[in-house]
Each structure stands twice: as C-alpha cells, then as structure tokens.
Length: 133
Image 1 (cartoon, rainbow, N blue to C red):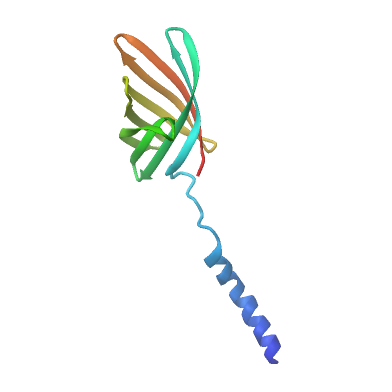
Image 2: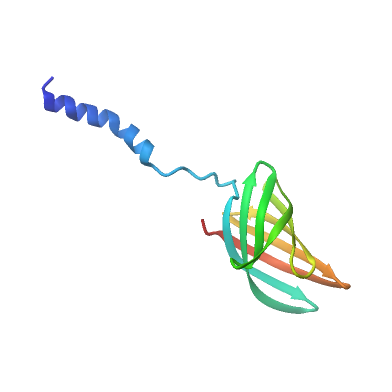
C-alpha cells in the first residue's frame, strides 16, 4: 500500500476515536444539577405578585441540595431536598416563613408549587424554571 494511502486509511480509522474524545459530555436529562431560573408567581390574600426564581441544585441519586431565592445574590439553603420518580421536593427557610416546594420535571422545565404559612396567612406560588446551565 502506498504511503499516502496508508496515512489516509489511518486517519479515517482514527477519526471516530478523535471525535469521541473531543465531543462534549452528554448531560443526563434526569439529573437536575445546575442553575435554574424563571418565574415565581405568588398568591396571598387574593392578590397576585410576579417575582423571579433562581435555584441552584446539586442532584445525586435521591438527594438534592443547593440554594434557592429570587436572584443569584439572594439565596437560602435547600433543606430536606429529595427527588423521587421525577417529583422534586424541598424546603427553603427564607427571611420569612419556611417555604415548601413541590415540583416536577416537565419538558425540561421544573414546574409546580411553593407553599408557606405564617401567622395564619397562607401563601401559594406557581413555580416555572428552566435550566440556565
């Protein structure tokens, strides 16, 4: 086999191996690790208020840790975080009441509700966040 033909054959054979080594890692769609941002629409005492949500998650197995708040600068630690069959639950102790989140992964977004109660007043929020990274 001529030298040039041998070189081309080696390059073609090695090409899939080279591409596999340089391709970005495939992200597990069911792993929730990352930064999520979106809307947090609060209903309390019959009034609705639009807020933002910024959630940073670390997901390993059934465990979930991280922080949540209205933006990257104002975050509180996630407590009792768990993931079970696509259902995500965690608590956040903000400067106010303890807030309980119940979310589901729907079409690549975390959607659901957050509930809190303080001094007999109930707060419900609709949560819809998308992965930023």
